[in-house]
Amino acid sequence: MFSIHCSPRLWSHAQVLITGAILVRGQRTVTAVLRVMGLSDEQHFVNYHRVLQRAVWSSLAVSGTLLMLLVQTFVPTGPLLIGGDDTIERRWGRTIAARGIYRDPVRSSQSHFVKASGLRWLTLMLLVPVPFADRVWALPFLTILAPSERYYEKKGRAPKKLTDWLRQALLQVRRWVPHRAIVFVADSSYAVIDLLACMTQLAAPITMVVRFRLDAALYEPAAPRQPGQLGRTRKKGARLPTLAQVVANPHTRWQRQVVRYWYGELKRTIEITSGTAVWFHGGHPAVPLRWVIVRDPLGKFKTQALLCTDLQVKPQQIVEWFVQRWQLEVTFRDVREHLGVETQRQWSAFAIARTTPALLGLYSLVTVLAHRLAQRGKILTRRTAWYHKPRPTFSDALATVRFELWRCPTFHISKANRDIAKLPATVLKRLAFALCYST
Image (cartoon, rainbow, N blue to C red; front, top):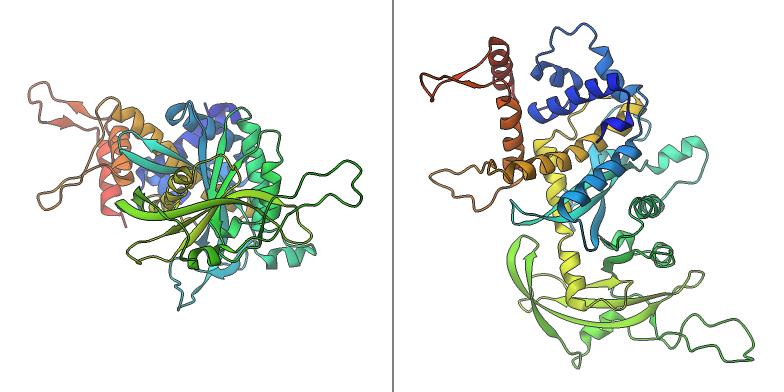
């Protein structure tokens, strides 16, 4: 499926890198991949480096194929729920042109600010129910490098904002799946009028669900234009109370709802209220939207607001869509812990732009492989006497795929004793090095 994007010779090298990146533990460098694949004596090792540095293939085309694979496997029908967010890959090095200094979202808090040097990536993930895990996972399929402002200053041009990168990415997704309904969920960083207006004005609009600010200027819809009316067409009607005023109003009617998987909890009772309005700011287009305010009856989390550009969607559905966005943070943590993101050591701009998106895409590929193995009853779940794991996680999916790669076709069961597996000496050496030198 992916071989159509490169030559046969390049594909043979790419298969080695993909398999090795799944099997290796610790750093995801090309040399570590070659060691775990038993190619420590490969004299032409530079050919594997060239797959990322110089070979002719398109990361964008591979992303489109990966999206089609995920759609066919997990959501062949119905709307596509896509989540998007940016993350920082901590990297140092003067030769990394796109490197910048950013706020570290993992180590920072409301009272403590931590800066990090690295690369900023914008990632789109397909939010799908994974049958063997019995919950929703966020599967990356498109990752874009969004350089810092300092990078653009050296080039003598205006910096490109994250919202501009996201707009281009969503337009590309719409080209890949022109006939499917798309719902995009994101945090408040992407609650931008111009971006929302662009997505709603498409021939096949993309529904945007993002966190909303409580002090936004909301208005009633503009009155219809009358025959013979002079002047410009009005964009908005009378001013409405802000969402902060709606929260403070004692006459606001709240509806209780039980939400599954509310930020890591199995079930959570919340209170919501909703309405429709037009969001407008001078110099920008007017955006009709449905707003939803969410508050906690127990007062443990702050009251927050959401917006949806489709006025016909029910408030409960908006909340359920947005809650699934939390899985993006889980995926970012898993790719760092299990797939070695932030451990690669490429310095060329071409290799940097390809390696991190490839590792994030590997997360989705491993999930697809584990899903196929689970259909045959081969999924592994680590359980111990002191901890009963209720359902598989990504570490179990990765272990299942690794076990299958190590087992076939290298393990041979003895006919005399079914408890004994015969291993070739080369495979035993690979396993020993993988265990002895793991970090």
